[in-house]
Image (tube, one colour):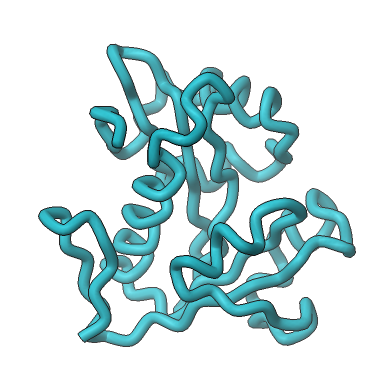
Length: 161
């Protein structure tokens, strides 16, 4: 697993994150409005991965998970996903929703389940991801977070108590 530092974004990270998302072919619409809830993976001073949350009351939208191609298969996507799930839980989210065109099997490993797009919370439907950024053919998934969900950095995983 990579020695990358996972940290909250800072204002000066914005353009680098946008460039990473563009290289990954992911939408950038709405990133600026929710950038305070993004995380980055930094390795030797370089941002090599990112993931974000959009908050909608008790629901969150996980978005923009990207890892630079040269850093694939090093566990960064897993670490970023674990950290953003923990962040959503700590911010009071009861459920995380996402849209994906390529990573359904990856997200299943964290307990996300496929749902019909119309089953996603109404608040999340207001996001630019649901409105226009993601194709209607994207797979919609959700993860319910119980109050007892805890994240253990020592074990590197999500613990379901």
